[in-house]
Length: 302
View 1 (cartoon, rainbow, N blue to C red):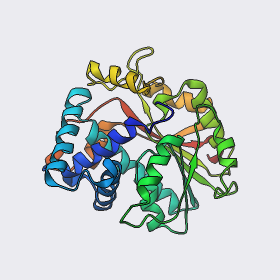
View 2: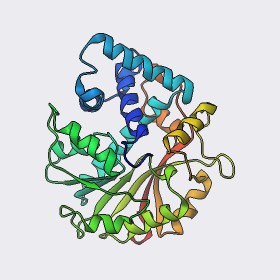
View 3: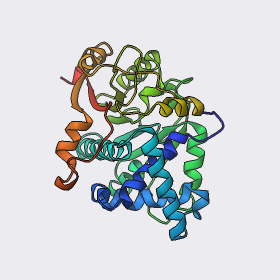
View 4: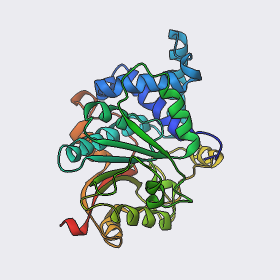
């Protein structure tokens, strides 16, 4: 991404969730609270909240989102809805137990930590993101009409700073508290050295800390694309400075994690999410394939 601009991909994801929520058939796949907060976020990041003020403006945004998806990665938005629902289920499971701190890395315009901070005020929520993207998000939150609880925002560029170093700068972070780290839609923009550093950073935190992350399934050596991506997608990502740079084959993921002291606790592919999460009416809907979601636990936890 361009260092002085908010991530275009973060905006695309937020608008994509809104597109699904407004779709006549797919809208039922977006939970009510996610719908409410996504709509509010979309209002705020699109021209200061004025863009969605009329039915024509909303139609234009939805039309644009539909065209972008059709020309780039068909089924991308529905895939993102499902991965977010799965990640939220993991977060709620963890925070209902001994884990009382959540750190979302590269949150973009996602609303998970905002919603959980309202639902679980006894837990601590922290977002780490690139300064430009986080600045745009916090500006939007200043005009929010929905409750956002107490979420702490830490600007950091983890391509140049370690996770441990960033957390050390955050007064709200409790280094003695078991923490669930979430890295959604992030690892594909890093290199292997940065991925290893991220895993080592989580491993060095309080006992009981875990990591949920998404990753690209390496389709061929050095190729990390969605299976049904149009060729224009790579051009667009390159133009935005957000080209995919890392991935790993699904079969090789457990070994990769073990090399950094982790074991694979749970794993979900888009097809598995389709079967487990989509309503019967949408079971055969087009969904983007190639990005999987993993829940990793330090080997020391057994």
